[in-house]
Length: 264
Image (cartoon, rainbow, N blue to C red; front, side, top):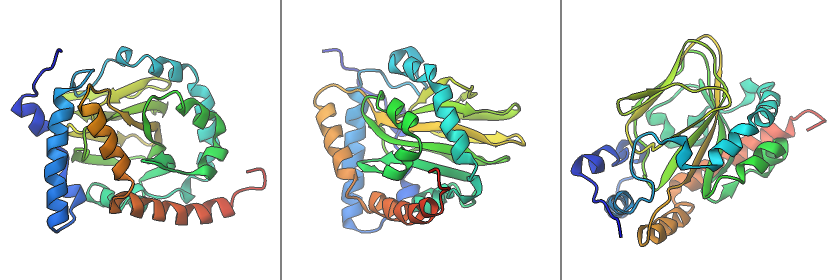
C-alpha cells in the first residue's frame, strides 16, 4: 500500500486554528489531542495527496458543476435582491468572530454537518439539485464578500474536509485568495479546490460584491483514516459549535422567510 508519512512541516501547516475554537476545560483539551492525532492520520492516508491547492481534474465532478453555474447564478441573483437582510457570517457562526466581526461577509446557508435549511433549499432548488453531485457534501452556502472585505490569515480547524469554491460574481480588480504562498483568483463559472487547514486569507479590494458557492466535502481517504474521519464528522453535529450555529441560523430563517415575497 502506497502510504506517505506527512512531514513535520505538513502537520504544522495543516494543524488548524485553535484560537478560533477556544472552549476551556479538560474535555476540550482531550478533544484537541484527539483531533491532532486524527489530522495526522488524514495526512498519512490521503488518496489525493496533501497539496494546499488541488488540480480540478482530481475531482471530475467539479467540471459537471461548472457546466451548470449559470443556473446557480440565476438563483443567487434572486437571493441578492434581499442582500441587506442576509446575516453576517459571525452572527450565525460565533467562532467566526475571531476573523470577521462586521457584516461585510454575508452568508446564505443550505446545509452544514448534518443540519439542513429546507427553506434555503426550496428557494434555490436548482442549486440544491446540483450540490447533490458533490461526493461527501458536508457544508454548502453562498459566501458573499462586500466591497473592501478582507479576511486575515487563518486556518480551518480540521483537515478531514476539502473546500470547493465556484465563482458566481467576481468583479474586476484585486479580488483573490492566498493559500500558503499561492495566490489564486476566482473566475465566474470556474471551480477552485483547496485545503482550508493550510493558512489562507481572502479579500475583495474592489468596489463591487464578490460571491462564490462555498462547499466543504469529505476528503478522500484510505482505511483506517476513512472510517475515523467518518466518525469525527458524524460526531461534529453534537458539538456546541455546530449546535449554536444552527440555533442562530434557525432564528434568522424565521424572520427572513416570514418576510419573503409572495412568490417565494
